[in-house]
Image (tube, rainbow, N blue to C red; front, top):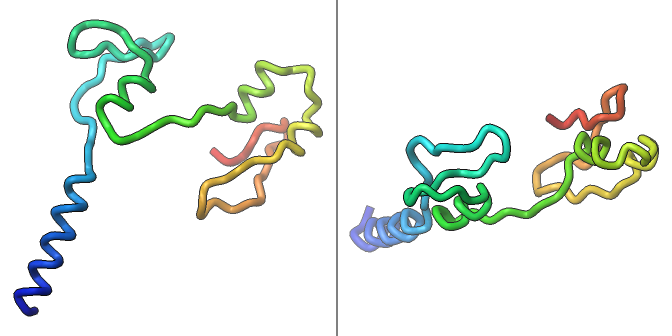
Length: 105
């Protein structure tokens, strides 16, 4: 390799490493509400903690099992018709178990 190629690859690697921000160590989490105790001893939501300590953000929704738990009056047939936006690379044909739960786990 030439010096210019090596230098360009090193610069690209440095840029990629600057984008990496990871959480490490043991996180004290409430087994009931899932709040995390921060370094100052205060309990905060897992979403807030992760957003403050990483580059991750949350998008909220309901899984099919929770929809069935929270809205038991909705027939399973209607749940199957709810449009689902899937991330890239995930097959678009969701499969359901016999009880109507999503078999995507």
